[in-house]
Amino acid sequence: MTELLPLPARGLPARVVTHVGEDLELADAPLRPELLEGIAENTAHASAAGTRRAYEGDWAAFERWCEVHGRRALPAQPQTVAGYITDRAALVEPGTGDHVYAPTTISRWVTSINVRHERENLAPPGATRTVKDTLAGIRRDNARPTRRMAPLLLNDLKRVLRGIDLHSYPACRANCSGFRGLGTVQEKDQPHSALSGAQPGTLVA
Image (cartoon, rainbow, N blue to C red; front, side, top):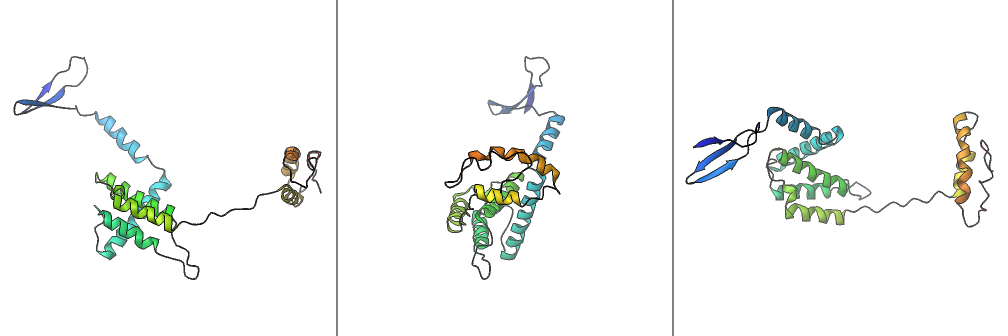
């Protein structure tokens, strides 16, 4: 049997009381329709449009893989997700042997699968130890070396500035005054006054 239990504060909705045997079970009053609509709208805008498109594409690719391999995509078993990312992580570029997909991309796939499950009020398979450990192994084995770029030294910057046509780009000529402070950036064999004495609109040879 269910009845309404009035609250002492004026204007507040009554709380629902359900009789379970000799006990009373209190339930929250329903939210107003406009609040439910606001929650739905905010949830829909939780991610940027580009992120939502990426998630949708990731999910579609996972569904196709499951269809080919005879696995269920929703709800997906943890072994299904682990098998999917293992299969994709093993792909390499012909000739170079480099992995086709970076670990960061594969991590996003797992996130996309989790988001889809959570949207359907299902447990995210990516939160299981099976998928977490599989993804950790992929990150370790498929890690790409960090590309280290050579620093831009003062002489390099001077060569770049000398190559600018100041007559074609008057705005650049006006902004050259900002380079007067570059004298604080020194090389071992470069005097401190290399650029500090330059006048606006002039380039140091």
